[in-house]
Amino acid sequence: MYIVVVGAGKVGWNLARELIGKGNEVTVIESDASRFAMVEEELEHAVHYGDGSELWVLERAGVARADMVIAVTGDDEDNILICQVAREKYGVERVIARCNNPRNLQHFELLGIKPAVSATDLILRLIEHEVPRYGFLHLLDLPQERLEIIEIEVAEGSPAAGALVKDLGLPDGSLAIAILRHGTGFVPLADSVIEAGDEVLIVLDTGLETKITERFQPPAEAA
Image (cartoon, rainbow, N blue to C red; front, top):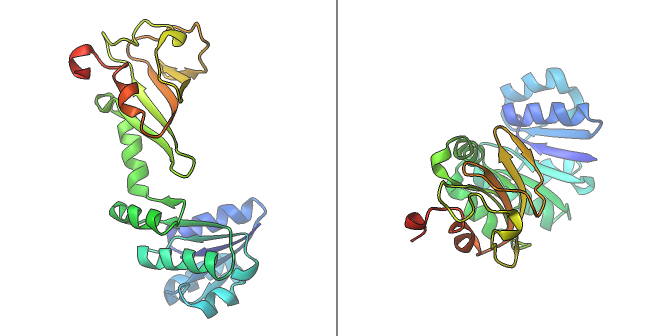
């Protein structure tokens, strides 16, 4: 693929290096002169100097023939603008944006900039995954498809503890796709037994979380 990366900070530089190593043609755009000079020593002609939010800079980088545009500058407004211009003016079908402030994620979504990647949000999800007391974790949201994948811990005394997968009583529109137990995971069969302390991955239609979580909590918590 031909990929245009806007922003040659640590994220953009390392990303470009990896993409080039995988055989892609990459152009990086950087507006800071000292940073540009540093990156140019390694990437040479693959890096262009200029403001990636300006049309002539994008055009010089060949955005019109790009298969993908990745905006990873330190400014969320610039990243939104770059992705919008790439998609709407130059017809780039695949855009990826970095979201520096997770509070701005809703703005990316409202403007249709997807996927928007927030390092803070990703780290928070990892923390939630590692800390059992959170109990419930969204792993993946697919709003356009109206699907989610969640991970939920099986509490002691819950209806799910000791039940067979086929007897879980999950609502229509949901399916248990994996069980994590003692550091390993497996795809369950209908006769697989769910144990307290297991973490169950479920794919579901949006809006079914409450009906599902009550099956994995003790009666007092569910009430």
